[in-house]
Length: 331
Image (cartoon, rainbow, N blue to C red; front, side):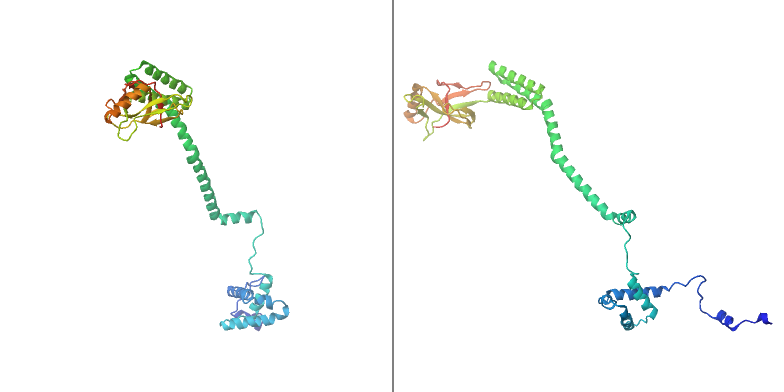
């Protein structure tokens, strides 16, 4: 009989509905209590700098908790005393304040990983700037230089030789002067010598002289004495070197078969200037000057107004009046 009886205390504990704490340690606080304690700390930290004013001394903890009670009561929240105590303790211990991890390789790698997007953008911008700089150098300096070298190589290998052969062939076809033909052959040979030496400037210079010779041979024009009303047909000059002498000039104009002006390269014997002109003075002797002047004074018209004529195939015109060939460009 004694073995089957239980003590009232034991029966009362077994029949109770309360959850017993596990053996070996206390149960963790409910999540709601933790969140409430964090909210208490947040209010302590941010509400009107309450912490700095009220937590300066432990003697005011009771007053601080009372103020918090009234704050939560106004929101309809009942906060247990232990929560307020835990909140004040947590604030003092910085329990809910974020503490950055200590510096080290792990922290640095973690920051690099977090910031990888920004760093990739910076790297992309840097790569773009580098590519733009490299592209600017290539397209602005290197590529034009490569093209210049390629063009010069083609000029020396193909363009100038072809042009020189063409110009020589045209000179041989049109020339009526053996001296002019030989001059053209000499210039073409000089072009070949410059090309063999890769001397582009010399090759261009000789080719230009050959082209000019061909143009002069192909040119045709008439030298007509000026005889329009109001215009002079002749002038005379006193040379500086001989004040007692006179130089006589007949003024002529170069025209083509259609009567259009033809510009010629003219060298002045007075000042040694060379210019392109279609009107200039041709030097004559005094008798020729007087004869042409008398022709004009007769009726105001010079009947024989053809001073000379340049035919294709010749370098110089054929003159119909005697002239030593001296020319002036101003009067």
